[in-house]
Length: 207
Image: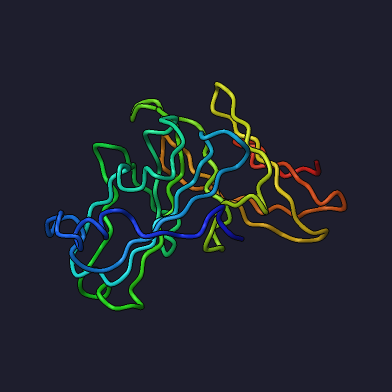
């Protein structure tokens, strides 16, 4: 699976090296980001953040990756790191994503890859419902090659249409915004090469 665009370095990298930043704005390492959007709705724009070679922890704010956004549809995200796909944290303009540096993260093999799941403009107390996490056994968990449509309704239910080859089994993760608990749905693609996963039923049906 692949994102919509090639990964690019965040602006803080260039700002510091041009002499306009301070040590809290990325004095070491590299942080890249890219994005995938399902359909034409900004509500379903996922962000990927890759960090490597950091000497110290660094806070990444939405403004650091805002060049991916077409509008202000999203102001809050649920984030997780690829090595701990069942551990989640909220990210917004007041609560940045903190990537780790130093120690085991200082070398080139201590990289981190975060996925930011969009939750729109929900408040912290209004995030109940299910959100698509994606294929938790892939680096890029949500892409247009696999996910064709995401539909939500007012009570928090979620319908996701996926594509694949006949007989292929896909492991798709979801996270509940109220409890921050993960649920994995194992879905086998049939002859139609399309399926719909429904949450909270955790069902997989041919499309």
